[in-house]
Figure 1 (cartoon, helix red, strand yellow):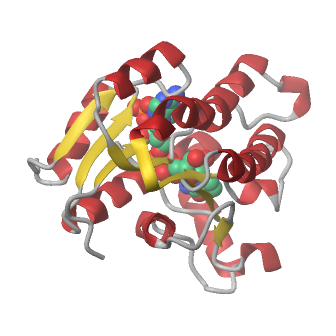
Figure 2 (cartoon, helix red, strand yellow):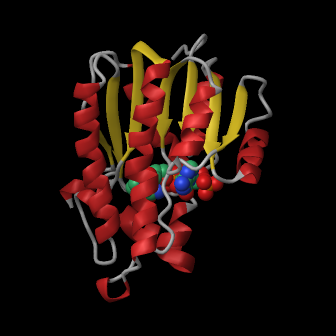
Length: 242
Ligand SMILES: NC(=O)c1ccc[n+]([C@@H]2O[C@H](COP(=O)([O-])OP(=O)(O)OC[C@H]3O[C@@H](n4cnc5c(N)ncnc54)[C@H](OP(=O)(O)O)[C@@H]3O)[C@@H](O)[C@H]2O)c1
């Protein structure tokens, strides 16, 4: 894929799927901005990509409208906006331990965040631009402790369909990943991460869990395919079949 002369903003680009996408975009010749809350994490991500001149970083909380508005005010025009951002810390709980503040952070990062990117970012895109967000398998195969994340993922997919209509011809899509080996699993499974992922790999039709690059490929498809909008692309190794 040739992305030269394309400028792409990636929220969540400091780690996991967002970082894998940033790598692909830089390799394809794009100018890339990775955004997240942790300045140090973003600097390390930039270093991991070889400090390319075409990659910039921006420390911004996607759930804070003042910060999101300030970012777009200083950014100029863009071709594509992606968010893989999610703050799920403390959100995987059984109902008796439900922490509404943690639930609010999931909503802020995965639902209101994309809404703010649409409000302040869409005016920076031209008619061929796109916005792509990340929902997740929890909406389709919910597990105990996962009600907040399941609800937010489902809501995000509804938001994507609405934005595809309101922002047209700008295209708006989502990728719904299955289980992917990233840092986020430390928060979901703690020190049982490796055995949890290995057990799922045995159950999945493809015989493995996902890697960040699997999701980066799907995000790139949605960025590049001019006839796809309002869609959720499932990249989950057959998880919905088991
Ligand atoms: N990994 C899986 O198995 C899986 C499965 C289904 C769905 N998903 C979804 O896939 C997406 C990507 O997750 P990942 O696995 O790549 O996890 P990850 O490595 O933890 O990436 C999440 C990124 O979001 C950023 N972030 C969190 N809260 C933010 C905020 N308020 N503002 C700006 N940035 C924020 C984090 O950076 P800072 O903390 O520095 O802000 C981090 O770089 C998420 O939406 C996740 O829910 C993951």
